[in-house]
Length: 451
Image (cartoon, rainbow, N blue to C red; front, side, top):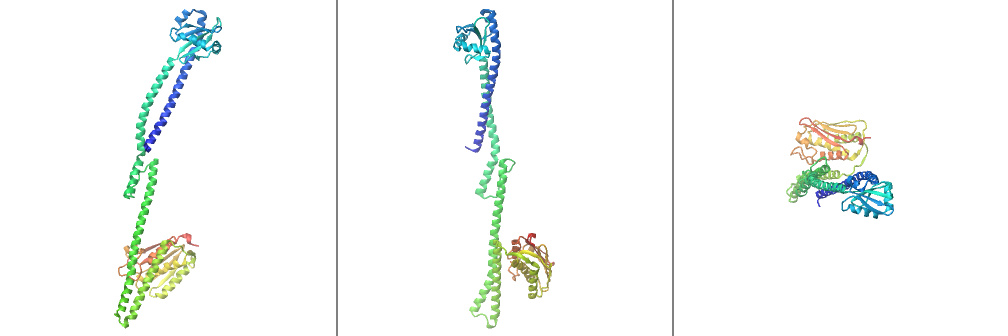
């Protein structure tokens, strides 16, 4: 059975039980009320009948009383006599009194409480002043039975009509309430069969609407996860293609010179120069592979070797080394006397080396650079070189990105490694550059890393 059918059946079952209980209670209450009213009339009529029997003849009683039956039982002989009542069943009242017994009837007369003479008759007894006799006044319960029968019929008809109306209304309301579930099933089918992760469930304030909201959140996360996975796979494909391209150039150069040397096509006086070219390309390829491995370790989330490090001392060492090797690029250092932070010293040193190497590779001789350190942990390297276009600046941290097609001095991984190291420390690297206004690279590490 469907959920809709079970809900409707449950609703109708509960309603039917409730109506049945209400009907039983109403019948019992009505019967009790009518019996009480009949008993009150019986008690008064029984006393009146006894008084009349004491001072009037039976004929006078018959003519004046509207009773169903009036009978007298002699308590001494236990013999009954019908005084009033010409109905066929009224003639059986004396026999009923005799069957009831003189002792029982005497007790009932003494209490004055009405009693059931039979299923159809209700009676009341009263002691007579003359003789050892009891007068019994009996009335039928036809009025009570008829009223109850009419009530039962009315309740059955009303209950049947109510059940039909409730079935129609309940089916409509349950259908509307479960409609979101049907739409959810349709949406889920679209997602499962068509792979349409953009489909969304209907939402609302009901329980089904709340379920739809939760499923929509789940679908959004799944969609984002698939998008992130696709983007990651796309980056991996692009990275592999770029890496292959970058590695192919030095390999082609080395292979070409080796083939020329094998064929004897290189003059003896040019062999040293060719060997230097081969060594340069091998060094470039080694550096590229090392940088690729470093990026792979950072992407994998390799743990950092963090410890308290004086970044001012690290910056002074790197600046001194760079100035000694590149006197054509003067560098100034602006830093506090001591700036201690919990970082990976080797990688932070690599950040400075890469940033200054970019200054050397992408600015003409004579270009000045500056290194600035400030708390909490801000490392900034700037130059007054030619700067970069907004398009190149936006892609500066992309892997294998070169500012120009002819820029083959670098691997295109320097800034990517800087960004990866900053991210591994919980920070970030940003770049600002405009043509003719130089370039500023800023690396920030969270405050929690500072001591």
